[in-house]
Amino acid sequence: MNSFDNSTLNKESLRIEAERVCVDYNGTVALYDASLNLKGGCICGLVGMNGAGKSTFFKALMGFVRPSTGTIRINGLEVARAQREQAVAYVPQNEEVDCSFPVSVWDVVMMGRYGSMNMLRIPRQSDRKAVWHALERVELLDLRNRPIGSLSGGQRKRAFLARAIAQRASVLLLDEPFSGVDVRTEKLMAELFLQFRHEGRTILISTHDLSHVRDFCDLVVLINKTVLAYGETSKVFTPENLTMTFGGMPPNLLSGPTPSEGFNG
Amino acid sequence: MNEFFISFQPASLLFDPLSHEFMRRALLVSALVGGVCGLLSCYMTLKGWALMGDAVSHSVMPGVVVAYALGLPFSIGAFVFGVGSVALIGFVKQKSRIKEDTVIGLVFTGFFALGLVLVSKIKSNIDLMHILFGSPLGISIEDIHQTLIISAIVVAVLLIFRRDLMLYCFDPTHARSIGINTGLLHYMLLSVLSLAAVAGLQTVGIILVVAMLITPGATAYLLTDRFDRMTIIAVTSSALASLVGVYVSYWSDIETGGSIVLVQTIFFLLAFLFAPRYGILKYQFSNPIR
Image (tube, rainbow over all chains, first blue to last red; front, side, top):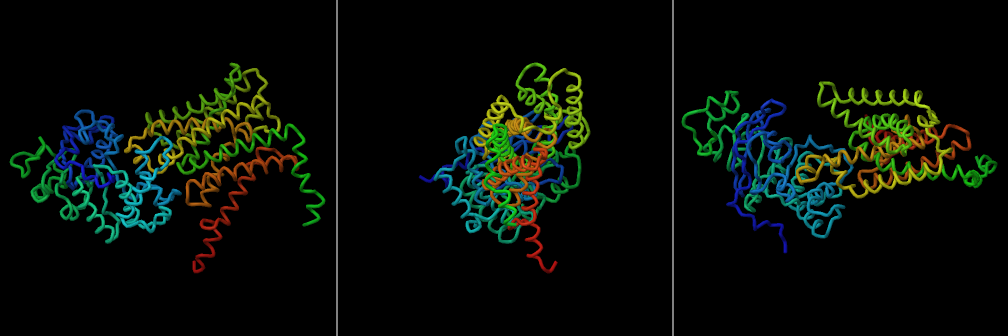
């Protein structure tokens, strides 16, 4: 039985439920009153300026910061529980990882399986199969024995994507996935995202690159310390909304008719 | 060259010292401690904790003295102060605007100074020079037992959690996101570091123990791109350097701790020059244009 296809993932069930989440760091508010519901099988762009709270939101979804108020549930579970069930995978920016570390591409992808292994993390046949399969999907099988540091930026990105695939996470969080990647990688990632959506996974892409959001994302969340608007990309991506997101207008000036039923408030 | 070896008789060079009980002990303990510290050094260098190793090894000093005064095994005192110093570093860093390297320097020198003062004040037969520079040639049987126990604990922890610790050093964000308790791993690594510092204190002393916790890892890092191979190379080179160091110290009547660390440094220099992929000579020849 190959559970890899995740064909059992239910697209109608809620993957991410964030309800009125506030996060503050020692009194400095990073995020307030942020609400978001995402179902399975969607690609959602998280758009905002630097310091708008994108990474704080990611951290809250991964359980790295505890919301001072509000709740977050992943697959209907508390975040810590969802983590243990390997539900959330984070694909880092290339600069976040120490690529002089003495590990091969295979080793990195195998790290996606650690959470499902026993305490000694000894790979079973099924783990090796999952890694092989994940490397195949990102077209890195030939380079599996190469040290991670010898890869190009795009290849490295694919290696970390393969790790998320091997983890079989149902929620993927990607931080600026398109920055510094080659055309081949970009095309491959676009294809993979569509496959993930088909498989019922939820993909949340944090970015300030609007053209990619327009091309790839079904849904978009505009964020500036709170969720300004969210909904279908075509409806939310209006000039007014984008001015609001990037123009630095205080969010409390937002009132009146809004294009999306998902508007927060 | 031949005459040199014949006149000194390599066999007796190697086996004569083994007829002495103190040399057998010194070789055993040094190789053991070298291997254990070598294993740990892989994590220290990859995590970027060289300065932390220095801090912990210096901070165990007052612990040794206090434990001695209370009649406890000094590994316990050293452990408490080693972990305590790290907790204090974390606390001061969090509660003040001072940068981390400053806090580390501040805390460990403070602890070290406290140790020096305590040694001079508490009436004991602790030999300051033994703590500072080690004395593997004069190691007692109780110390050997203690070193064996410490080494067993350190090796067990590092082997059982070797994958988790590697992941923690490489990508702590991923480790956390798959539900691994990275806070626990952090303190586990620090505790093991404190224990290894105590073990290393026996052979090379407080001042030089940081070399045992860094140099083998750095040497191995230049020689391979695989973590598992790196640990094997580090352990082997470190244990070998300790053995060679003790022999050299015996035959040329030089200070043992210094001798061990010097041999390790020579190993590093060899790797630095001749490592197949990362040695500087390789760079020289592979880039003739530059």
